[in-house]
Length: 156
Image 1 (cartoon, rainbow, N blue to C red):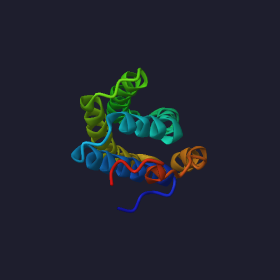
Image 2 (spheres, rainbow, N blue to C red):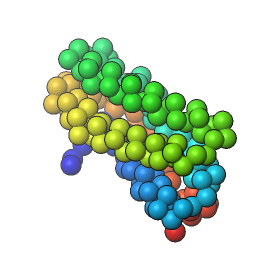
Image 3 (tube, rainbow, N blue to C red):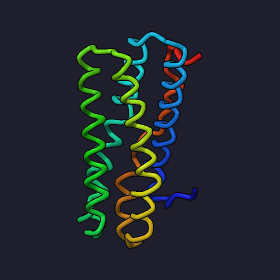
């Protein structure tokens, strides 16, 4: 799917997020150390995901994009962000239960699919070129991470 160039930085990070999901699936199948997988999740959160969520929340607001009809999708995005943050909070408390790791994996995958299949296409179809360009300027600074560089290859 060809993404509007202004949303590309977010989509690139989604690709990295889906890679994290895949690596966690492999790690769980291999019964990898849950503490290592927890550290992987927290590294991904601190390196990219937290900033990604903040960027979406700040720069995809219906009022900024001049799209009041975006509100329902934006609210869903915010709710899913909060669900993922709740799992991160539990993991930060040194909790490495397999259920939390699986929950993070599932929530992140579902969330990325929602944004790529519903939220972004809606924005691309309905936002003006000017509003998209403004958002794109503010999103262009996002890092292009690669979670497969994590030092412990628990998925192998």
